[in-house]
Every structure is written in structure tokens, then in C-alpha cells.
Length: 112
Length: 114
Image 1: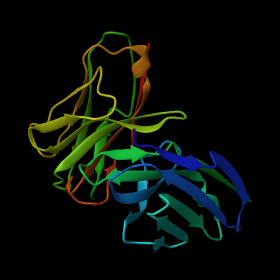
Image 2: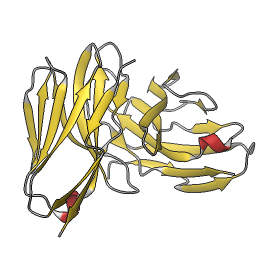
Image 3: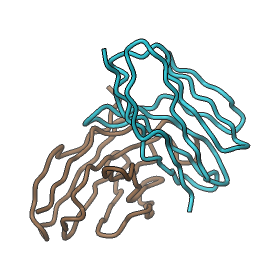
Image 4: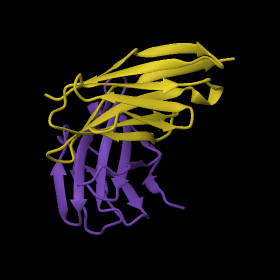
């Protein structure tokens, strides 16, 4: 069964610091990988979408990387802000159909 | 404003009492889907629809029904709810199911079955 594993499960960082979230997947054949941000009690919002040919993609202070050979992705948050406190979800799509595999998410808490 | 609207946002019901959670999108999207989110498990797909009158099971379809009679609406039906269906439910839509397009989520519906 296709799986998406995220680490760490949660982390706490100080405002202004950087952090990196990890996503490892076994989905095959691979189509694309997405990172979503989910604020508490809200629906997920898309941050980045990457296909197998893309190694990196940025959205403001968020930078996602993808290594399709090792099936690993990371999301780097630069100069964190209090508003970055949220759950970050990695989602991987199969190329055969529109089945999406979701990671359990990493909860980030930014403290002043 | 482009959005996916779910109703109700919060619902407490009792075992066996049929309920429907509505989902509507105003973006003329072909693809719509339902997910449930439980602590530690992440989002799991219940059903999805590639277009009008086309629906298919996701990973956890047991106990749920859906219909897609018109493009903008995709209701989730629980014919006989049970306590293990207590969860946070999300509806989502995308322009097309065949393309790596952005998936837009609703604000969620928190369901408690007593």
C-alpha cells in the first residue's frame, strides 16, 4: 500500500528561526507531490505542487524540494512567523489515477 | 469569491439517524471528493467524483454514500451513522481529476455521533 510518512510529528521553534519538515513516500508510479498548510479548525490550503521533473519550488518563505529518485521531499520555512503555526501536510499523487495519499502531517508551533 | 462551501459546519447526532452533509463549489470544477480527518491518521479519502454522474470509492467508503447529479454539488450521505464515524469531514474540488491542479478544500464539518 502506498504510504506517505512525515517527520517530525511536531516541533516548536522560536519566531524568526528556520525549520525543515520531511516527507518520505512509497507511492508509485509517482505523478506529483503537494504541500498543504492547515490552520487549526480550517481546511488545508495549497503551498506548492511539484511534478517529478521539479527539484525545488518556492512560495514566499516556504521552499519545497523533491528528490524523486530517493522519494523524499522537504519543506523549509524561512524566518518563521507566529502565523506559520499550523499543521503541514504532504500529499502524493499516483500517475495512474487521481488517488491521493496523505501524510499524517507535522504540527509546527512558532513561539515569540 | 471562489470557494467550497460545506454545511453544516458542526453537527451532533445519534446512532442510526440519517444525515447529509452538503458540499457546493462555485468554480465549475469537474473533480470533487470527500475526506475524513482523524487525529494521528491524516486525511483519508471517502469518495470522489471525476464528473457529473461519475463517482468512485476512496480508501474508506464503508458507511457512506454520495451522489453527483449536478456539477457544483457533491453531498455526503450517512444512512445510519455510527460512533466510529465521529470525525472532521472535508470536501474538496479541483478543475480536473486528470491534471495536477490545485485542490481547494472546504472549511470542514465536525460530526459527532452519540
